[in-house]
Length: 349
Image 1 (cartoon, rainbow, N blue to C red):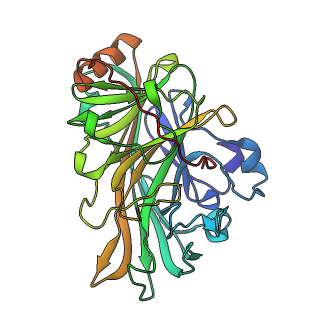
Image 2 (cartoon, rainbow, N blue to C red):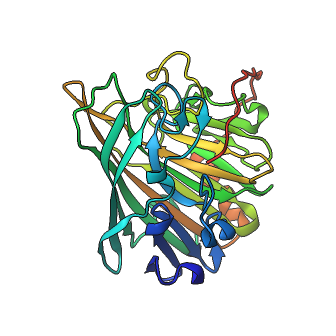
């Protein structure tokens, strides 16, 4: 908090606080009951000179990452464009519980199409935690929402480019961190078209699944938009911490493949509204991600808008975490036979 005292926007809740950092890609960092909630690379924050300034926190950037419309490739070279990596947001408005930041960007996708757009993040500190936390005694909570958008200025067709708002909220991974998704028909809800199949790191339950995000093996999964997931989240037993993330829509528009791979079956071969990323030991982090849809009108790309909500709660004791998981995930299914599918391995965000 002290490092960004002069440049960040600070929001105070009863037992928590958070920062919105316009000069760090509009990232959000939180604290609750004295616990840092996000991964943060302090050296990168002090001297942001890397080819990708991976500060941590809640990041907002354009999808897709790979494929023929990828925003993070120059030919076969993975890179983050200057308007995303270096260009700061400008503060449009700021108050005690809300703020808006924005910037005019120009990015070139892998197909060579130039996108000139307004990139905008609207932040709101929420007064209450989600209802699913109300049944458990809490020491404290932090809740906020973002409306993240791209507005494309020029007439670009859907054959030239796609873009969607994408938030990647990054946390430190340990043996105590376990991610989950509450979703009907859990066994058919996951898209594995990212990296190698995560194998027995996935466990299926009656009302969802868990993914052991311990930062020890790189992997990523998507949660299909058609599966109608309620939310994703993680628990950290070592800190009695639970986090929930919700993609609040809009749920119309065109969802497409965001994966960091060659997407051999094309940009419409997947359609996810959530993703969970697990790093290897070099970063020891994981991400809970919300993914928006492209707004296309008469075959012209207009942009993308997505509302996400994030809530953290520090529970009174670990038993309450078990009670929470029992209620929202249900009974574990018998593990199925795992199949592995190889794919390219790319850099973490």
